Image 1 (tube, rainbow, N blue to C red):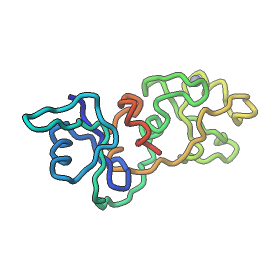
Image 2 (image 1 turned 45 degrees about the vertical axis):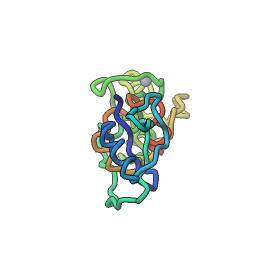
Image 3 (image 1 turned 90 degrees about the vertical axis):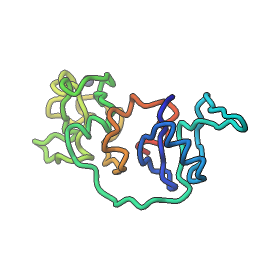
Image 4 (image 1 turned 90 degrees about the horizontal axis):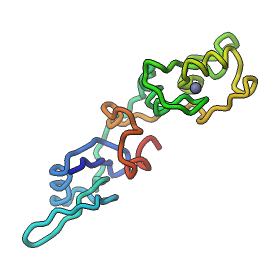
Length: 168
Ligand SMILES: [Zn+2]
């Protein structure tokens, strides 16, 4: 039985729940199924869809925070992929790249730091992506904070049908 992604009524990811918790929320009328798993639970009188993604019907209030700016969160934002060659690496083989080089006033911030492998980082050197003819796969951005993000691990490892609801 696969776990389910639980969303707030406002569609923000809240947490990953096991199927029992998911089914309980549905039985209590507190949530609806957005994406069902192929598998169903059967009892004597009824069968119930097992959710892969479910949404609370009433919004729970979550205090807003910013995502902590850190090496691991940058890698997670970029799916552990070098933003120049597109290859996936482990954290140990990745580094930060200042898109606008630091020597030219580029800041160390969400919007100027991209995940890079070591060879691409050396090749780009202190040039901009256009000078180096190394276009970025995605423009760096500040991710939104969700309670879910805290323990989410590597986002690329989650089920395909969760992805439309993550990091939008
Ligand atoms: Zn690379």
